[in-house]
Length: 257
Image 1: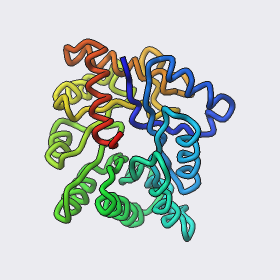
Image 2: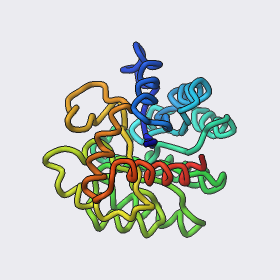
Image 3: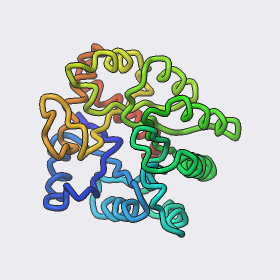
């Protein structure tokens, strides 16, 4: 069994005391691939460095929507320059967030467009953060698809089935994190059950969203991905090994690994 954690924040300060141990425990748990996802220019540089140091780690570089308002002059150019570094496999995370509203929506939208445009130009996938912004996300992505094909993933998906189908129509992948394992997440599990086998991914979003039965544990870490995989495998009537193989193959296809 080989698992692929398609989204983890390995550079987060919560891992500072034991980052090497976190990566080692992930490998011991069967997690053979981790995408370390940047949220700022500095975070992106740290993710690139982690990917250079650990053979199970790859990097995504970007400025997360809640940090766009804090971006310094030159940060976007730094992120774009990091695309030439080895083991960088995606742009992001990017997107829109109306829940926290830390950054004006117009600024978030500008950076979202930059990420998607650059991903299209460089033939790379992008990683989308979406919170209370499904309508706006779809509008932006439909406009982007008019320029050319889209290649990306809706990370930690929590939308309804109509939104999921709209994302699938845009040729996107949908990734599910620990939230899908929670007892009150029946509606989200119904969505996950309906996703085509070749379009579903799994993630931890570590250090956040620890899955059941580890809910409340902090920090979450990639070794716990097996709980989300087991939940979804049972839901979809697959063995854990088969579901792990399927989602790993999907992630490798998306990220070109």
